Image (cartoon, rainbow, N blue to C red):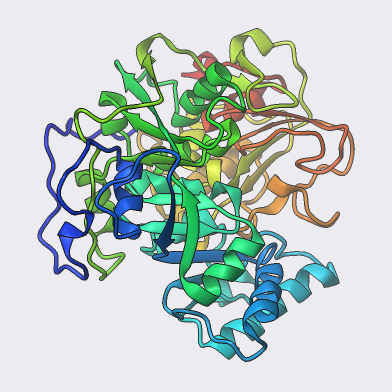
Length: 472
């Protein structure tokens, strides 16, 4: 895992301001990051957990699953000829049921296309030729990774999306949360939404991050600790030396799964890692906010990451925590590496490093689904550290994995029966995805073990749930 120097103090680089930085007013009480962002977005001097406020939306994202419903509500409530509140603040990303012959799924994308053209939406990442995604320059892939790569995730802003894993963007010091179609339809017409300010739980991750651990292990451990209801309608703020030394993609993994604990949003303070990632991705100015030193938290958890070991979430819940070594007798039928949680470039690099170090071939079908077009390109161009000048794609090929698929959500949400890597039979799978409820990846009798890319790759090599330390 790439490390960066520990950040002691950070200030945002000078940028032209689009709005006055003093919009939160004079300090009347200490606030958390989440409270500060919502206070500024609602033009309030200060906010406390439990308050209901109208907030201004910086970005609204929708996709092919919820977009048609959102559009229908917008037209019903605001009129067939109504215009969206701001065509440059709506981001439409088809990503879930894309590479399928299902007519209803394809019609959903048609509806998005018609609406984007009618409203002159600036950020519509269209796909027209399903036979070859590479000839679609606008197509991106999984919305949560694409939002970051295309510069829509900016510190201090408010991002709503019609997908529960919109919370991924909190890794950028942004208030980001999933909403329903009705709320999204209202935002399309007004740019506003009524929000109850969530209380904040703080998670302090310190210690030395072991080489065999991944951010996925940490969030699975946390969810196992507090349960799937432990953060219901709360902000989960991550801090500590381990978080400060994380890459943006690892931070995205942490924030991505807060919803699996019931969280309203996840958030990590913006720092030089954030600013460096955003360099060249956005021309819009932004203003980070930071939790006050005397801010009050609903709860605080502290973890010494040095003491942790590879974790899995056993069927059928993300909080059914176990350690990989204790599941070594669980025979598996397949491995799946992909999704907004585990289909980013660094996730594939991690898996490739372990496969290369082993020098062995996989014993079960191993499906690879890059989150976006950019990630797909990275698999064929980025050289894996310590792998004799080989790319991820070359290592995967030599290990006997399936050829990397077209970027999309694919089997993470099941989908139509012809969805790539969907489990159409009762099987056992180790997956880097985020949910393992019955039927989540297809057949309702399948069993899914959630794991890190390291554990997924190690399991592919043995045909059993495997602790990655066996090969590291």
